[in-house]
Amino acid sequence: MTSATAVVAPIPNHALMILLLQAGVLLAAAMLLGQVARRLGMPSIVGELAAGVILGPSLLTQVAPGVAHWLFPQDAAQMHLLDALGQLGVILLVGFTGMHVDLRLVRRQGSRAAVVSAAGLVLPLVLGVGLGFMLPGELRAEGADATVFALFVGVAMCVSAIPVIARTLLDMKLIHRNVGQMILVAGTIDDAVGWLLVSLIGAMATTGLHTGEVTLALGHMAILLICTLTVGRLVVRTAMRAAARCGVPGLPVMTAVVLMLLSAAGTHALGLEAVFGAFLCGVLIGSSKDIDTTALSPLNTTVMAVLAPLFFATAGLRMDLSALADPRIALWGLAVFGVAVFGKFLGAFVGGLFSRMSRWESLALGAGMNARGVIEVIIAMIGVRLGLLTVEMYSIVVLVAVLTSLMAPPLLRISMNRVEHTAEEEMRKLRVLSAQDTTTTTSGGKDPVAHQ
Image (cartoon, rainbow, N blue to C red; front, side, top):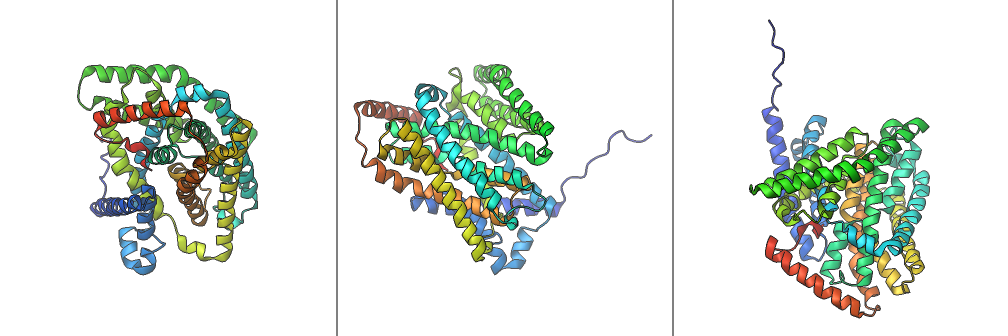
């Protein structure tokens, strides 16, 4: 008789050693350079990405190719192990981003936020798609469909990053201002629509642009959203309540992770992006009045302090800034950056004016929503995984994420200095300070999810 199952061989010893070294070296470099970036007044993601850039083809491969090829061998199986760690981190990171989406604030601001968000989405999306068709073939991965590539570039141009925006507004003490509130609400809507579009384009990239496949992808999207609003909401609320009532330390954390991972797996099974499922699950967890999210602080800290920096360092590892030394590629990179900034600024500015905001308030709106940060980096990695972006285009998109995040604070400061305070803002400021005191007491510090 033969055995019904065969024993699968474990990971080879050398492959495991290399994986542990890769993770340790990348995390140590990300930690050190992330702290340097924060001391210089920059988002920590800048330092974490720089860790990968230094250890990757941009520098280490040029200076010490032997060391680089030994530590980061260009072997698909080995790199997939490191990518798997990064994917776990990004799924939980996006899930926690979803938890900080304030649906009540969205409902209160309603129509005004919808106008600002629509203008801030449509204009950069249209300009980005147009630019995507104009970009040279060497920036599009071999075999990638030109239309899907152009659509992907458009989506990359129109997203915002709630974690970066929230951290910036908190650090600059603008979170209580009317403009700050509008930036958060419009950015939240942009984030949600952006993940939806990325998921849809991801499905197109894998199935093609045929009418039947596109219709199927839209059908899957509709099924997912309906299930999220009905069965998903009930399951999440019931599971998190049960975990809290048991009184077992760590059970709410474990339950949240299980829900996010299963949601990501279910979304991926539908042919959509896994991170979209994690985002929706996070929104459900954060929007329920019956769930105490402070119980998830330990996991939040682990994700932000360990898994997210490791993911961003891995993302930097894929960048090759030496490719941008080619004047032609560098000029196209400037064009991408210019379209990204111009489209988002002008869209948000026009949306603000239509919402009866002043000129300076509208400029501040554009400055805040222009920050791409963590979200754009994740989208760039998705583009590589879908086989749409070359190393050069990937590097350009990540640089756009970094540069737009660095632009936000000084531009916000200039514009907000010309906007008068209101009595309503002062009352809101007192509530924000009270909430921060409560958070500090319950979690031992500031909420870390916004630090990227």
